[in-house]
Length: 627
Image (cartoon, rainbow, N blue to C red):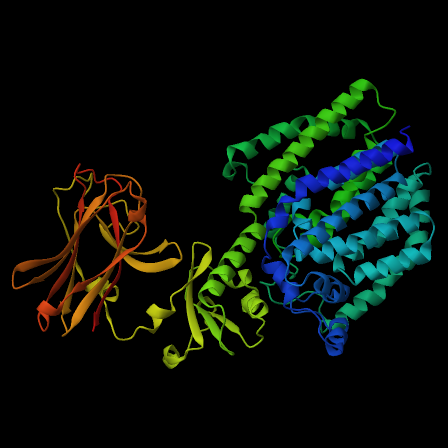
């Protein structure tokens, strides 16, 4: 038997390890889901009444989540994401301790320690400790655990109170009475199954009956339908086999394995191999040992996961927070003391393996997960807009042009990100991808700013969008003539390795904080635009190399009329020169050709060594203006 002092030391070490593993996310900004709470905080008595008498705009009923955020966390931390990261981590540490206390009612102390270590150090906790994104999850779990522990101690009234509060934080708490039955079955494991089940159900009846009024209230709030009828809604009940099979990821995540082995970096490939000793050891014991606690733990996992298996919502790691307590129970059953030195060494190796697997997951999640991606997009876009527009006029509209991405509005919580941080409730954000188009004459309205979404951030293109006076050659590209000099060496002059298969094509190119529509030409290509030169005209041109290989390119701008070519500019960009990969903008005087019709020509040639690989030249601006 481990002494109380050693138990405390081991728990402190466990909590310290959790802090080390899950602190990296504390540097991240808000993501779309955490912005959700910022934009929906309660600010009046009417808001408070509404949140208890109606479901929210996601068809959820979690009134205490909004109350806790609006009247506790937001007054403490405001718009500082670090405070919310710390709260989420502290709640996870609390939940780890509560899992230990619950397991200690059902297992020897050694098993309770092992089970709480599995729960506390698992990689899914990266998401739960991220920030207030999963506020309802880490807030309702302590109430659920307290309810279960109170029931094991025959404290029915506290158990019911904790259950009722948990239901007001998240609907998933409806499984808690069924988990009570499993816990009581474990507590009565000396009794035969049928007798233990009968007694457990009789003790849980009051809590099961509590679910009746809860579901009645839900039906009233939702107009008689528990599930949204919209088949695209994440909470829509879907019984399709394909949708059910897509939830296989839950089981891989539960084993601390990556769900897509072929798409992850080589270092993450190590995880399955590192986990093999743990899985073999645990699996063999599960097959040999018919302990009721193992069966109850596995049933716990399935019962807690069951509601999510019926929903259309895609599987997400944070849904495993409560189910993992069941696996902690099953795992803790396999650990029995006192431990010999050999068992301690083996346990230490398995723990180290598990922790390393989690650490590798955290590294990958910090780089690739949807929460960190959302945070980076929101932070970079907000920083960029605030730098270019420190203040905005009242009633301003930020309009995002078509991007080809379906869900960019989520990054900005439908634009609430900007109204929150500019502290202007009149500020709007519209998205062309959702069919929200601007009026025809809106280019005259100084309150409208236009952006493009590319490279996972916003770029301001308002000046180009407002420009109605210049002649924009890029809009004439479909009418332009493309010639190619076959003295340049390419393997196939009929099909080039470009997005269009042609030696010249249009492409969006970003350089620093500037995003431009461009014309990209390969070495050997000449693009001719038919034009009539107005009086007092000049040509604006920006150039940049696309790739960093090859020996650079030579670019020429010419005017062609009456069979003659007039060189307006010639330049060379060296692939090894960093400045060649930034925009070089210049003006070319067209006054000598005023009133003449002809072609403006943009020619690209390979560098002095005649190596064409990587000789891609980007031409931007390409507009004729007048003095």
